[in-house]
Image (tube, rainbow, N blue to C red):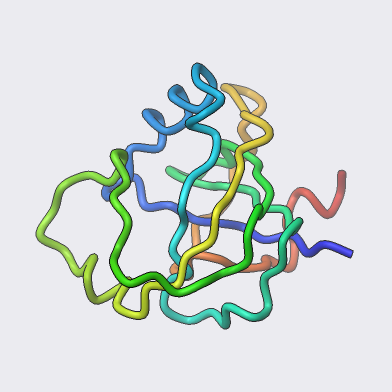
Length: 132
């Protein structure tokens, strides 16, 4: 049985609209590399887990984990990361990543309002997808 997670992106640090448009236009852009974040355990995530992607207070996309988390030797390049002098290296220092494939896009009124989280991945207790 798969688990369902919320993946929160920070709109100040990530061009979610660019990622969304690119993934709708080009099937090759539907797969992306995602970091684990700071507080999760990589072993709790499994291939086939569902991910609702949120940014700017809304649920924007849905995806599925195509790989479990694995350690890389370097931080992968992501064309949609906004340039900044922030703590990107610190946040990704252990370099745990998975591959997620986008399977659904939510537009305008279909974008559920949802509270963002400090953790990259979480499982909110009252998530809207639990009522679907």
